[in-house]
Length: 412
Image (cartoon, rainbow, N blue to C red):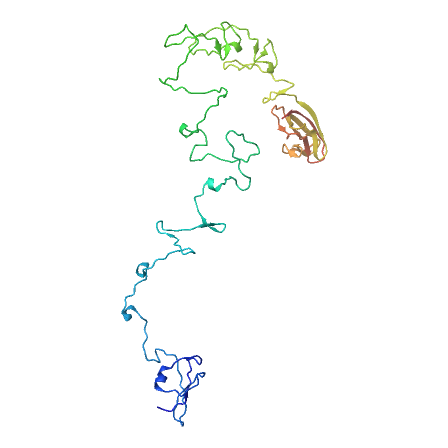
């Protein structure tokens, strides 16, 4: 062996504390190194040189060994999953005093409810009696709904509880069958109300009927004296229409003669002689009526639509200025001027036309020289008509004097 003076343990071996290096201890003897030092002193040759040694962590590489993960095969053992059965264990809950708190019969845990910090509380099912509480119905905004006994009347200040019929129950909309209707009992003080029913045709029995007659009829027929009609008493003899029963003449009634003096129609008295149309009966001329002589009224016209009498008016035409000159003024709201006859002569060459205000009623009439002109003979339906409430004007193309006249009626 070489003579070694000292060896310092480094690289992973602690420099403080106690321990034993068994390999070196077996190989080398110690020379009384101090107990407080961490240096192992080895005696040797006085001429020897100390060689430092370094100890490092053992690994598979520097140990020249092969390390593999332990398995059931490499360990020659059988590994199974741990369970309560193969571990032979059982968990038990105990209270602070060590008393078992499990109920194996009911598979439950015993629990004491503490009341005010003391043990011994018991939990029972909640009921209205042990809770000593009342429920209130509210929507959280309008207050608590009022619920009163059936014999207590509702007040106007009570909070109402709005309910409706379920659509899965009684039908709330319109008439329905009795099976789908709510039962109703008629009040004992209900006034009499009418009931309308339709009797089915055929042999169905509608019920029993009786009369107050005791001497008329048989078991199949009912004969009675009619003393009222429509609630009004009747009696024999001629009566006014208001006290008579309406009668319809049979379709096979033989002809009968009626003698009467016709003095009024529709409550209006009739008189002999000529009278106005409003006081006369309307008459339709027979299809075989001969020719009826008709004379024209020399002073009036008749409006066939309204039956109004129209009186013609005669006016002179005098104009000499170029442009429009009024001949007849406007006749008021809704009234029109209808010209039924006219004539115009000129003192020279000029053109002229008639207008309703500024609206043309005719085209231009051309007069080539003095004494020229134009006109329209009598025509009841009119030659031209102004617009409602507009004046009748004559319009000249130049400042040439013209004259004449026209006849008109006012129509609507």
